[in-house]
Image (cartoon, rainbow, N blue to C red; front, side, top):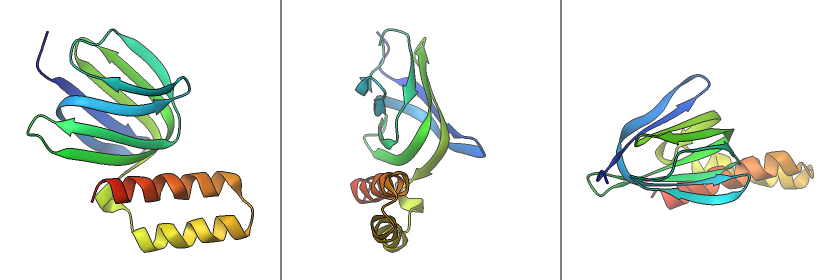
Length: 125
């Protein structure tokens, strides 16, 4: 079994993060999944939620991901997201304002997106 896997987190408009990792945790329509080197091949649909990547160097990368697909084979993991932001790219104050606005407007979808962004931003700090 290999000691690491190659991860590519790609949004519709850019490559968000790419590198070697020892573990990736993501939310799929079937629930949360952890992928380590040697995992069985998989193809799944991503739900909105934080994605946590444990890097080869021992660091942690957290991203807010909104929809897309996850694919794993031959120790290569692809996360193809509709929208993805790294935690350090998220303005916490702005995300809090978006959450408050979504709650006031009773917009469940906007509320879920803002909540995911806040969870990713605070988990990555």
